[in-house]
Image 1 (tube, rainbow, N blue to C red):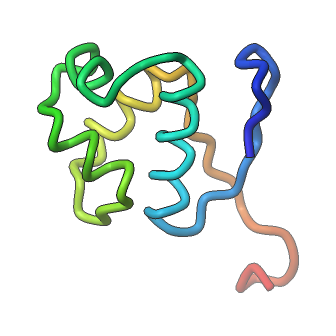
Image 2 (cartoon, one colour; image 1 turned 90 degrees about the horizontal axis):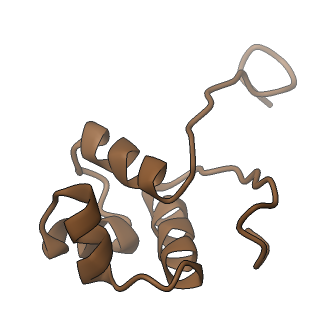
Length: 87
């Protein structure tokens, strides 16, 4: 999980939508933003932020990526280590 220093590099593995939601909630709080504030900055409704932080799996990907960008995050996709099935 992230450190309190928002300038420190953050690497975390997200395996479920709930993992991403917890990360978004933590970073939003660390940055002193309310859900309403983040929704306004992202141009979404407050409900979207609530759903994102709860890990709703059916949210629009581009909106999720936009929120992550606002929080200073980027998504990097890489192959898992191990055999061809990632084990």
